[in-house]
Image (tube, rainbow, N blue to C red; front, side):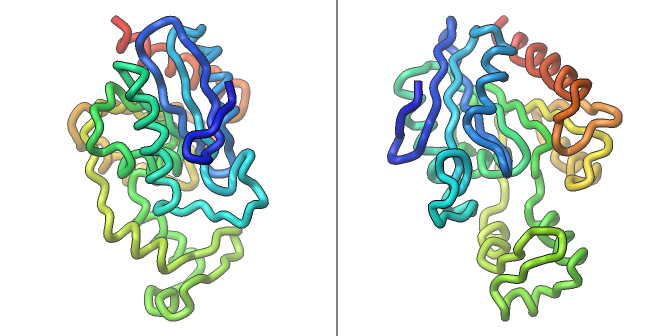
Length: 231
């Protein structure tokens, strides 16, 4: 079922249990990515997914994907879900995992499944600044600076991230590829120091799990960690 929550395009897939999963895609993704996840779970859980700003049905609307836009939208979808489902977990990719943490940090999330999560956005932005040889003073002065690798550095984005440190206490499963060229092993290791967190590493896996082998590994991981929640 496709519908709107506060003008946010959403997709709902009904399962056979009282658990629901909020699916949050990453950059260049869309809510329809929730369909193979739902099928992989054989309909045992309900799934609700949304299109983040400038993605899916929201392309070419003049929107930008920023935390101050995405975070309240994820929370709005969660608020809709919690009036209908007694148990809610989260499945999020990359930057979708980053947005989900400040959005849901105060909520009783049963379990989070994060694939290639951006766990330290401040460090990631600072790494990108170094790659582009951009200083903090230059970024503060110019506000936005396009880079040769396709990202636009934003002072407002960087300032928001610094002002909103991550506080995350939900039980969390992380899937990480050893060949992730965006998120360093140091970032993941630091994140895994928190309580109730378990890391699964796919040797040879990349930031974007997309090959047949990578997708098979990811699907097996999803089934295993969510099956534990249903026992």
